[in-house]
Length: 228
Image 1 (cartoon, rainbow, N blue to C red):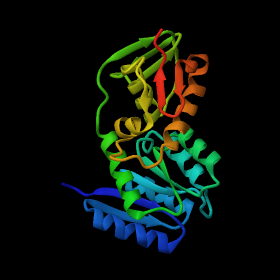
Image 2: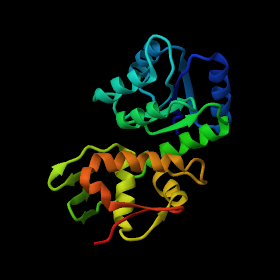
Image 3: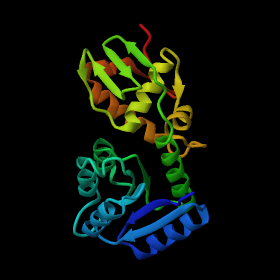
Image 4: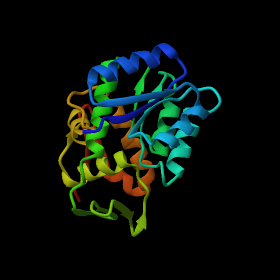
């Protein structure tokens, strides 16, 4: 089996070397790197990696600009993106998710955790959605066509937002705790950061408009789609 191509776009040489060693230990990866944003975008287009480990703070071109350019191009929009962010960059993380990034890891991080998250992203990307349709009030989700509508109006969701809504609609009326959602939607084998779930639920509600109120918060536990 051919090794999975990983591109690391990061301007700190020690971080790049640390990640290369971690992926080498993880097995099954072919890793390349770029140390500035412009070179990283060029390399992404040339090499077409399966996933990019993308630092947000880069010289010459920011990580968000790279993500935006990749997702706007039909040739590169399916490249998976794992963002590296600082703790204070919550707004950038939200923008990154809106642009289509698949996950983030906050610096400083465990190299082993990052490799585990990378494998989880790859697993869920290779797992097809069940070909079912669900209707909940004004919300309609067609898994086979990867389409969501609110009162007949199409709503564009990222892959993760779609999977999250699909999971909640499948289990309508039943509360899903954050750890369960991390396992089923994100593919994590253990709870790493449940704030990831909260961020995506907030973005999903915003995109669904008034229909987003159907996603209820169960304090101290998780979320459920209201059963009417």
